[in-house]
Length: 191
Image (cartoon, rainbow, N blue to C red):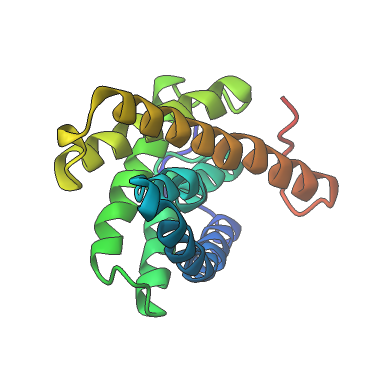
């Protein structure tokens, strides 16, 4: 496993591209979030859009960690995407960077638990799980989730994990496989 001193220019460029690309995607996702919130609010489920889309908002960290296989790539990828979103006028302003750091830490923990040796489905599932746990803990403290009924908490947690696995697991793997086949990445990720 490479340490920060072993970052190559190509790694930094790929990380920056992930950050910019997802920061721009996040701006569009914010509008989708607003529409979904308007749909679910009359049902008393105004937080469901957050759960459905959080996997996408956490995807840069998971993708950066999985592609680059360098310690710290998840945190940096997620943080860069949050900075880009904020600079382009994201609706949550500077607080986006706090979320970016926490989401990146959640992603990084998954790779840490596998000792940076499992860049396969085990690693992706671990990353989806740790990101779900860290971000859910943050929402328990910040968003008042602790006041919700148990069935609603369980629903939110399951929906969030599914979102993390679809975006951070399935889609991350699909994107990486496509980039491997096109010879964009310098290492093979066939696991």
